[in-house]
Image 1: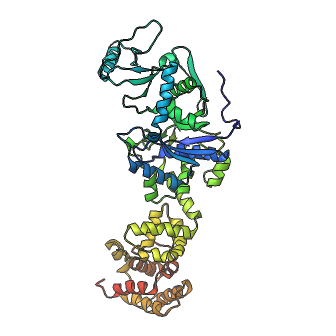
Image 2: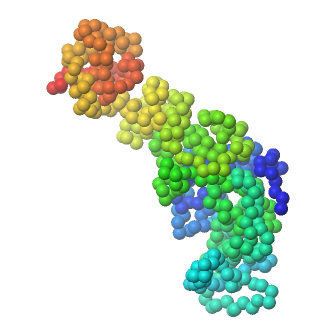
Image 3: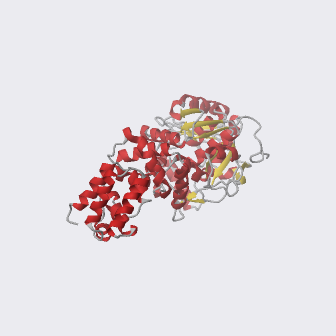
Length: 479
């Protein structure tokens, strides 16, 4: 058997796809697969297709579809075709199944669920591998019973019994599985809805998909799919099975083990470029590059340097990558994003977004997420409650007269860093205080915390009246 060498220059136009199931959110593993498929298509100036595999009717929801589409938009993984919905293609699957029945590569099976379970129990009791025993499979000289009345048949694929099925995996290398290890798969359920492995083949055939990237868990599905492709006389795509992503405990990152959705990372204050950067490095590398742009990823992602080993999800590393992205971001862009996070807290700044830009410039180097940045900037719009311990530690030790004097000077000072610094310096001299005494007290009263960037830079971004009101509140309190 001969297959193209992995990742040689494609002979024709590259067509990749991502095909999430709308039974939940777009989780991180699927997002990584989507990213690799998108980047490979973009690198080769090919086509990226979005397909929604919604044949699990009982579990698929419109809400999940909406969240998947929203996550793809947020990540910037734009599709050239689609979304294509499998449930809108039932007639096509039916037509292909009927053709296979006519050609003898598929057959109807009337075995009831109870019969099949009894068959499996017998196999387990004998220590055999559980598999369909071919009771309704037509064979030369074999007499099949009459179809039982009132029983809706499933359609099974007539899998070859001899030889082996193999492929040169784009990630794992050569893989081969003996056909006698593979049973006759149900390709159409009794209700007429196709099963996953059948619908995928018909879709990839119709959509002329050339390269299929998907998770490691699909390796066992690939032999069935290759045999169905061959039964249809359809060209085979190249398959690349990506290693799993492990969580902090070394288990597979999964919905069942609390892997959050892509959208939840947006809500937690991560930037899409950081998520793409981090996801790309979970199984792929380009030299020692840790931080790169979307354009660089497309330039470099030729499909080589994909790892065969599981990747480890590391939230601290993601935080670091996101911090780098925040530092590099335009302050105006950050301002608009932080305004959204503040709005969720009931702080409406939509009419004053421009004011946020210099605030973002001052604080962004201290933040790993937009939520942290919003935590800082919230003090400019709502009075921050100071912890009692900080009030005792920093404010009670400063004479009220000094705070009152500073407020008086700030009331007439030029409202700039230089003017504020001059007012603070004069107050220190008048009351024989040191900066480490006065500055933390002012920070606690105005900002709600004792540690901030340079005091004059922080105060300059407040309206003068806000600073004066917060300082004077201290001079009239019982402190």
